[in-house]
Amino acid sequence: MPKKNPKRNPVHIERVSRKQGRIIASTHRDGGVLYPDRFDDIDINPRALFGFESPLPSSGSLAGGPRCGLCGKTTNLTKTECCDRWICNDEDQYVLFSYDTNSCHRNHDRYTLCAHHHHEEHQGAWQDCSECREDFETEMYVWYGTNDYNFEKLPNPPAYAPTKCAKCKRVIHLGEDGYMVKGEEYFCERCGGFSLLL
Image 1 (spheres, rainbow, N blue to C red):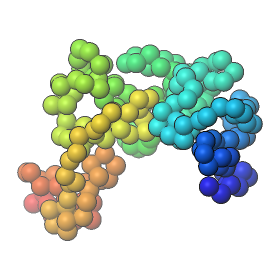
Image 2 (image 1 turned 180 degrees about the horizontal axis):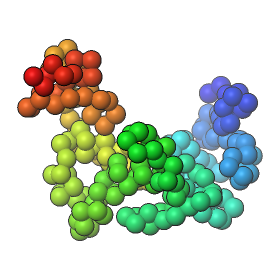
Image 3 (image 1 turned 120 degrees about the vertical axis):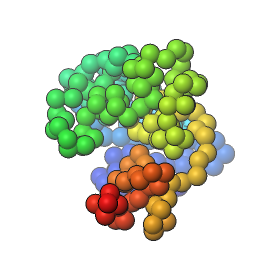
């Protein structure tokens, strides 16, 4: 694998040995914490390096202090009510009716199965809760369980047929795109509008 430019991309990766497939990662100063320049003599799982499986505790920094499990910041933190993880205490940054996603706390609290499970006072773990599964259509269930606002992603999310605009047949991503619903039909932003309401 070729080296990436560390000035443009703070993490660069090189293949050390074809047999071992070891990875050496060097990073730059991020958020006031200096990460090790090399992971000598440690075989690192590439999936873990890219966040599929966290190689480090999600609730602490390498220096030992708490850090947000979503963005990595180390200041102005609180713990979530649902899963007791460190997260930015930044709901005051949200502008009412902006639908912006600039708040780690608000995003986790509003857009995850973890928080929904807690707010609805379901029993057990959210990952295998049948009540949570029934509360959403499959596409939204998968989105709430796998989006970037989760500390832990839903393992083995169920398959679903994509939602398409009833008029132009474009795929609508219900968790991200704007759309309108009339009866049982979905319409993309382009095809929807006040004419549908009449």
